[in-house]
Image (cartoon, rainbow, N blue to C red; front, top):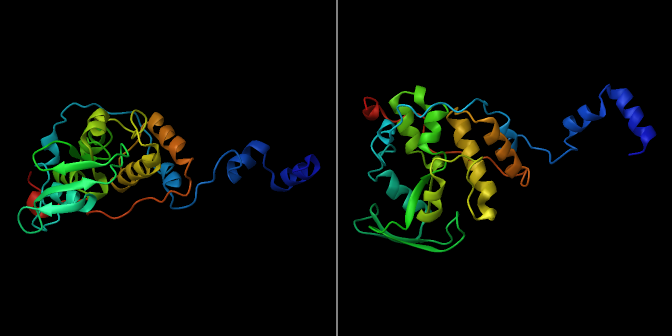
Length: 233
């Protein structure tokens, strides 16, 4: 843009060059409404809370059948994410299959029941959720989060266990081709459950998602309250 033209535009709009860059996104990729990148700015930013009181059982029994389909959540996710799935009884208990490829490492990983080569990861770790809002929830909402397919992914056990309860600021999948999808998933879960992010976490999310500004925000999953039979837990 010529200097004279730029001056006329600034005079007409009443914007400074800094404001104009911010409004048009000329300083970086523009985020589209409904994209994961745009949604990052809708998340509440606060400091991390304490881990005091956290325990896995505060999110209910592991892999509760909250969708009432007769299968536990772990088998539901294995059936969804694995290829060449085999069952031991009907179409529920998964005994074998393969991650082809594993999203975190990019490698093929075979699953055999009883061998810990495949984990079901909570995209937003339960301890992280506890520190960023879930501590104040009732049991029903915590159980829903722990078993929501939107927050679950079958992955190679090795990379998953290096993650711990890390957020985007402290851990990303080694497979760089999956990082945009991974971060978009975390944004979706935090938006759906009204969990907050820390400032470094928000900045890390933006950094990843600016490389893929058209990345869609995942949707779906289960309701944010578990069925009534779980409420007393």
